[in-house]
Amino acid sequence: MAERWVPGLVALDIDGTLLKWVEGAGTTHEEIAPAVGDAVRRARDAGCHVVLASGRSPHGMIPVADRLELYLDGTEPLWVVASNGAVVFRYPPLEVVAEETFDAAPAVRAVLERHPKALVAVEERGVGYRVSKEFPTGELSGQMILTEVDDLVSAPVSRVIIRDPEATAEDFLALARELGLHGTDYVVGWTAWLDLAPMGVSKASGLAHVAERLGVAQTDVLAIGDGRNDIEMLQWAGRGVAMGQAVQPVIDAADDVTATVGEDGAALELGKYF
Image (cartoon, rainbow, N blue to C red; front, top):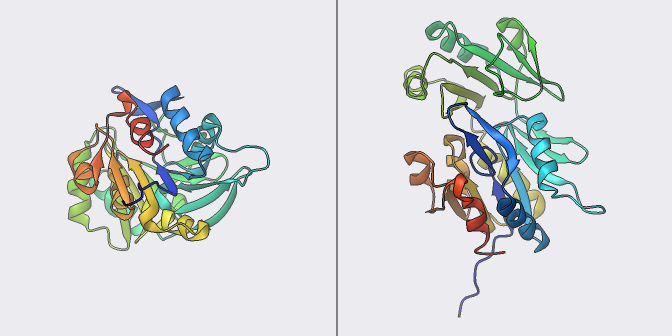
C-alpha cells in the first residue's frame, strides 16, 4: 500500500488565504482566524517548512509572520517570498537573500499614456512606498513618500504597483494584453491594480529558490492561494489548491479547490495532512 502523501513545504498566500477580505474596501482584516493559525502551526510542529508567499513587500509581510508565531526560540529563521517572487528573505531578523530587479520605466510610461490618472508606487525597503500620489487608505503598508514618477523608475526596481481607482480589473487585463508589456511580467489584482515584475519572476520562481535551499522536492510542495498572482505557484507546486472564492483562471490552474477564506479553507486543506 502506497504511503500517504504529506507535504514537506507549505507555501501560503496571505491576502484572501490567511486573511479575510473586507468587503468593498480592497483590503484585508489584519487578523488570522484561530483555526487557520492553529493549522499552520501544526504543520510547522510536524516538521513541515512553512513559507509565506505574497505580492506584499517584506515590510507588509512581517506583521503577518509575527501574528502566526511561526518562529520559536532556537529555531531557524523563516523563509519568505515577497513582492510576487522578486524578493526572497529570511525573518527574524529581516535578511534579503535574493532580489530580482528590472527597468520599469518604459512599461510605466506606456500604462500612464492610457491611464494618466493612475497612481504609481515603488517599495522603499523597511519604510513603506514611494508613490506618485496617495493610494486609498489601507492599500499599502507603511509610509507613503510622495515622489515624481520619473524619479520612481529612474533606477532598476524589483516591483512597481500601478493603481487606477477609476478603472476595473477587466480594464487592466485588456490593457496588459494590448501593451504586451515587453520585458516585464505582470499580474492584475482583484481591482484595477497592476503589478509589474521582472520577466520570468513569480511566486513560483521565488519558491523554487527556497525549496532548493531547503532540499525539498517540487513534488513535495503544497501551495494555497486565491489570486491571479498565485497561478504560477499553484501550477508549479506538487499540489496546488485554490481558495473557494478564487476567480476561474486561478481555479483552472489548481489541482483542487478548498473552501473560501471566510470558511477557513486553508485550515481545511492543511487538516488533511497535519
